[in-house]
Length: 300
Image (cartoon, rainbow, N blue to C red):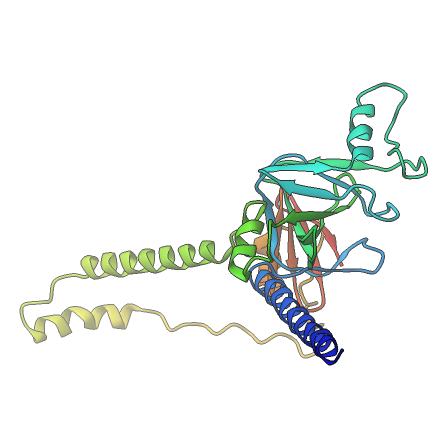
């Protein structure tokens, strides 16, 4: 009887050790993916972005998303063997949408009218949550959130199953990279412009040096040639000071229709940029400026 008690205690200890190790593995995976793909924070009603994280680029076709106004999560995606799949109700709904009179109703969702959109390779969106599901159906779980398309934002949950034991943090990142990658930053453009400007400036300096006249034969001739020119040059006239009661010029402000260069000239370089198709967003400390086709469309 005593041996049985010891065995039960040993099982309990080993079970606790396995649970602790599993929790540590899960935390390391979430931390590693979060270091590669920074999270975006949305408003509570999911109508806008509070803090922009990494802009993700989709690497596979046919990721199905639902409008953020949809209750619950009726259409989660699963990525397996290089393809996205959805539950049977969503797959049936997508087929019914191609048939007149069926509309967008998703079977099993209380016949609610649900707006969906299928995303394909190259489209961009944000990551709002990272999780790891343990057990028999172990998977990496990612939540996505999109910019507005025809005034509608979309979201979805993606499950990336892993076979057997929980993968290492590095292997988990590789699984995610099959589906999404981080869009390249705009810093390279600025570096190239700075590099090009330096080269142009150097060329101008070189041209100026080449255009300088050859020195005179002796210092006396050079001084004699420079003296008449100095005497002929008129004295500069100082501009009159503005009247004391003149109103101060109003500070420049950002307005609709301005270009990114005009906005940068007024507000300076943004803390962060996000590009989504024809739309580009500049994030400043207290303001967010949205451009569409290179013109200011919205200021918040």
